[in-house]
Length: 113
Image 1 (cartoon, rainbow, N blue to C red):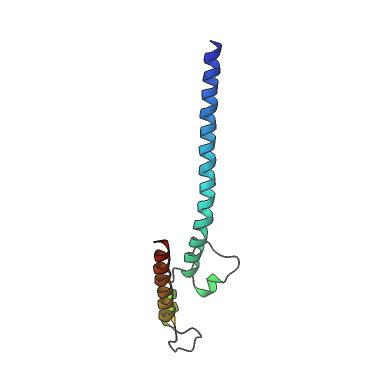
Image 2: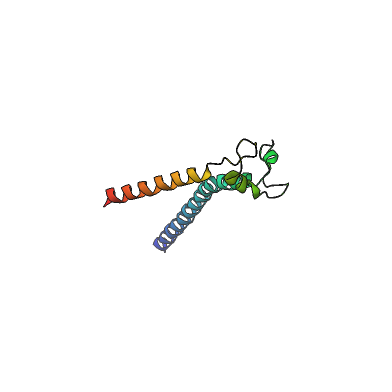
């Protein structure tokens, strides 16, 4: 009878340790996921705010003056210094980034093979 209690208590301890270990893993993974997700949320959230609201202190957690999708259009197609002349180099920057990415991918693939 005594050995059955000992075996039962050891099994209970193992089960408890497993549950605590799994819970600790999930807590750690949740914290790490928040460290990754929050900056992306903040970046997208800020890009959808007006300029005044994006620079306001204290910052807001969501765009209170409405969502401004025109910020993306302005960044790609309009002027950068406010003189009304389209002088955006977004296409050049995008193609440079695309070219570097493709070349690096090819070099990395060749070196691995």
